[in-house]
Image 1: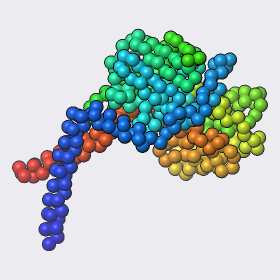
Image 2 (image 1 turned 90 degrees about the vertical axis):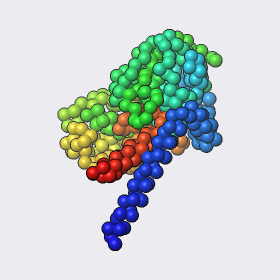
Image 3 (image 1 turned 60 degrees about the horizontal axis):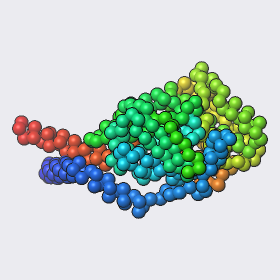
Image 4 (image 1 turned 30 degrees about the vertical axis):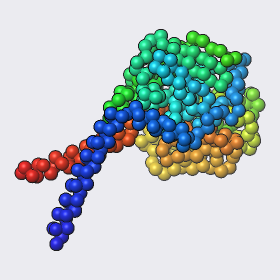
Length: 211
Length: 177
């Protein structure tokens, strides 16, 4: 009797495993074929269910004497748009870069400087084509614009790199020169955990605090 | 060692972030205190530029904490260092569960007894609040960067598919045997 039960359980488990396998395989193929459409649908859905702050509670102002923001945006607040014309990107920049936030746009790493403050500005985003998935297509010299509440800042790409995740600190946050650092998981396609990061470094070439 | 440094200085930052309602001179003193080197169990620690920058941003956003809170936070900072020294740990792996709990308890203690609110989370982050109870930021204690791959669901699906392949392969072996 027990043997029969075990045999039945084994058969059922095997059927389930096979069903899972084919379902997963189908899902993987479906996702691979329709990746861009799925990203778009999830992107639209996230706009409906978004719970983060879409705008700063109070407008940000820049202290031109201290060369610092007078007050900083709250966590989860949108304080800028990042625009990369060469890859047709225009997405929101949130304060903070944990996974909850970067579902909706790019995230500003807490501890890094803000545009115009003269230090390292670190911004990261997912590697979908609607976020930073097309960063590898950018060439040295391409422009990146950060349109913030308090000013418009234009950067020019100086170099790119592919680093292991734990090597991102190779260029520590510093305040000697204004450098914009963008990164995303790399490679930008394929399955499984991505251990590398595609990094873009850019220098400030224009700042308009008046907008 | 790197993680240990991060943990200690994230803790130092969280605790000392409260020292804000002081005059300009005191803020300078605070910055000196934060940026100086600490030697704990023979290991030298120093705050990073990112942590210093976070502190300055917090101060800019929160101009107002009582002096009694400042004193309380100072006491807890000293306690945190004493706990780590007592443990004899020189890396995060050396810290026992009870030591980690003691350190987390200090953050909770500060939150309960001062206007500075900071709560340790189970995912290795500490949430620091502004005085008006809005979130200032989630400071990641165990890692610096977030995972930016958008295909997490796919990773799960491919893992399930892999399991399916293994099961089928096993069964086919049995059938062939």
